[in-house]
Image 1: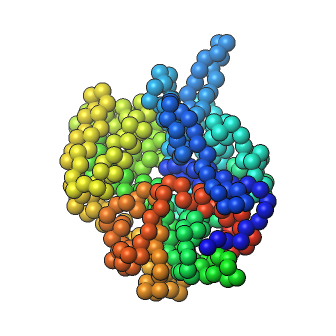
Image 2 (image 1 turned 45 degrees about the vertical axis):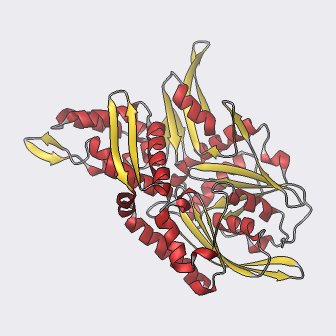
Image 3 (image 1 turned 90 degrees about the horizontal axis):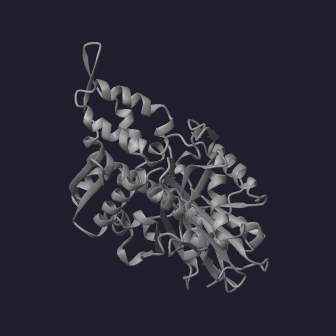
Length: 440
């Protein structure tokens, strides 16, 4: 079963994710492929949503350099000069509290970071999307990350950034709707499909009814819901339970003859990838150095400071991601983070991890129910459930759907590429109005 398509030539789908970004190209025949990148002898189909800034001296003048994706990681790991490694910055998209960050004396607002990131991607791809396609569809979450996300602000920032890249008539679609379109290509019969997309910053759900009309696939979106709890939140739980207790959390400092607890806010920010990336220049680092001099046990805080000063967020991210992935397939894992005199090791049982994220899973479950309620569809009326995103592999997440819908109705796709493929295919559809978000 195929959706009715246009003959406008290639179309592009852009899935800018909190953790990874994928660009897919679809032709009028429905064939899709992802842009690939060669870095360090490896072929990448995803471009990690990260930036690395550093300075080089040329002709007696300091020049700021920047790389993104796997090159940002490479520079962070191998570079010898001072650098700033930034990740998960999509989390700031709808945040009014995020005004700017300073990087080597330059001021960067969110749209500056987003435009800079995609410039690095286009440069490595060797071409820009406007040279490839007439129609470009960009994904967006149903609900942006953050406590009080400002949807209109995120839209304004996205449009500003993409306009700087030469995109003027871009279209936007919900990320789980892109995944639904991708999954629909498998359907042979009418079906009501629940798509669950677990990203780095948000978990989004869409219910779509697909019907065969005159031999073609006719979609009807029924309801959407989203929540700012996802992979980064689960990482936060590991850092909060395993890492920050060994970096001073729960400690005390002495001031004016009184013993006071070390402020929790520093440790909360440290455990969030987007905030950790900004701590070096936010003023918090200077405050931490002052606190360490007053702390009853300063050594853990000095290790905290060392991680921030030396931009070790990438190393920590890898250690946390490894533990989380292993807990999806094993009952136990050994967490290890080592650098210089910092050595954090701890066994983690899957039962412990599931207890840490228990409340998060409850909120996600409630959001699935919200999507069904908005769609006015009962769980028994869902014919297929399509799971995508790395966190969909976590057993307690999978149980949300197996308990409600039965394991026989659950399908999974490529954990990273399905959204981008679906967005590109939406661009080929004649019935665009059924898929895109106009009011944003």
